[in-house]
Image 1 (cartoon, rainbow, N blue to C red):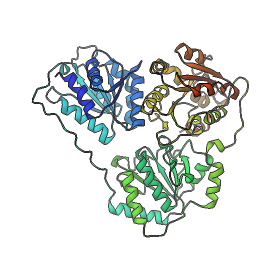
Image 2: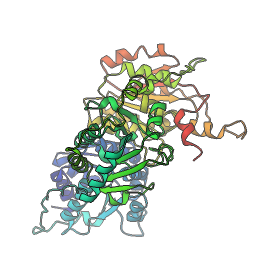
Image 3: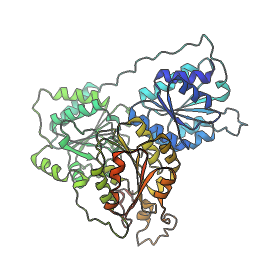
Image 4: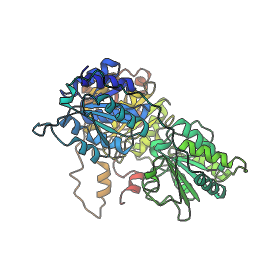
Length: 550
């Protein structure tokens, strides 16, 4: 068996069931072998789109997903998506051909590029070590949740695997560490003393077991619950859901911001407590104690000073500390009747009043998104691109659980939303996939609309079309600056016409009544639907006003 065939077979044996990519001469045979072994291959129109699809699929399915690309230019085309995955600790395995001859037009320093964007670089070193090299790369993805770039030299691909090459066996993944006993007791003591504790769960807590364990400890200690944006929905349907503040940070409701900033103890569970989740630190009072729990030692205290850092698995730590509190009386903590009453009437953005700006041929994005929230089925997966608009779909569209929002925003690149939705849709086909994009990001990634049509996805794409790069316009367009905004404003684009040209159904929306035909499509979504929503453009979103200037 040749190396190129052995790699595909071994990846499938290890558990790879889905791969995304664009096939060129360098990755043709490896991809073919993976498919022949039984994996599904999804062809994208651009390697950048393929990388984001694979990232989103891995996040939403919980599986190691493969991105397969051609050497050199195919690999460099994928790098923005690979950087996003690496920053998000996505278990993504990038299998790329590699031209090792410096005289080749395709030669670039691929290992250095991987390390430069935060991924782990690996290589198939020889025919004899090929199976072991592939297994090592896969394990690193699966067990440490890392994005790994596996370089496969072109010349090695054509060599035969020796008959006596050892086929590596899967070893069980090591269990996550438990916190040190002294640290757990210190944490328990902080909870005993706290009167207004708040738990914030992040990406590292994004599992059902972690959600249950954190919720149980919160009930015991009287803590309010919150999540970072990427873990939104974690506490939906769990005991204590009524005490959840939804998302902490720039997307926080006024009530959530008030209650978090009033906490005397804030605990980050698998959460960096970074500038976005803590509004540049403004959500943490000067007198609050800060605790951080993470399986990554280097994450403890990385983004801010903390009073206590616990190295351990989130689920394991929550169980350990709950047991320490079991003999004492339960605490009501922050769970008071007054807080309960306020959460019932002010707890979500859909309950926060606003002045509707719809008119003059444009719809207020809040009006648009609230209307969509009432029309769409509850079982949905929402993928959000970056831009001025992004807070509206992220917070006004409800999600069923922690896998209901696929938030590829660690690198803050626009243009990822459509591909994110495609990858997430294939991971959770039982849910309605919704892509929320700005006009700039949608047009940047529009080539993948053909992919959605070809796959027959029942995908709803909502384009918040203000005919400009809204974040820049609202940041630099203050009258005192008198800035020239011609570089970030554009003529109106008929996005609905573009969508129809790709084979999609499409609507142009300037007011709520224009959404009526969506009901018919939702009853039988046989192809993607694109909504070209002409949104108001006279002011920046609330989260943007908070974020810019830092």
